Length: 153
Image 1 (cartoon, rainbow, N blue to C red):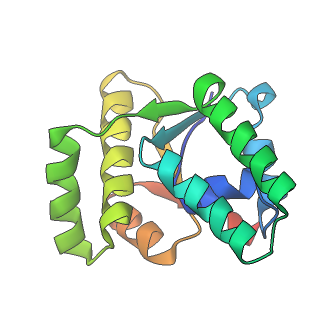
Image 2: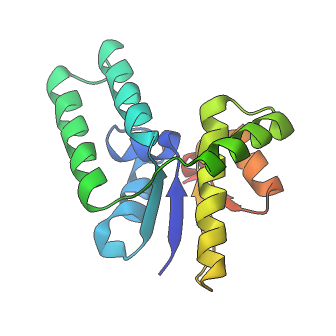
């Protein structure tokens, strides 16, 4: 079974139609058997992205409410949410400095690296980080993580 870490820029594609949405929907479909990991801050970031789409009239109020409802249900049932720990915060600060990442991008990368390390320590398959953020993908690659950009699908 494959394991993926989705940052907010990728996961929002499951709830609002964007380039790459069909690919993300297939990747995250529970029937795929894939393990989908997210950072706890993704809860805030995805809702904020949906709210911005509503404000910008890219989503109706009804569609935005439905998207938020689906997302919050998925957080409880289908997504493996990784809490922020002091170690993750420390690592994120170092990653932000090393790669000049925005704060939450550094947190996303730190969480992905923690999950990947835990998986490889248990001799499970490595994690692939999925993000639409080129800078985050570049930093992840330099940290030896596999990446994929849903905008390329």
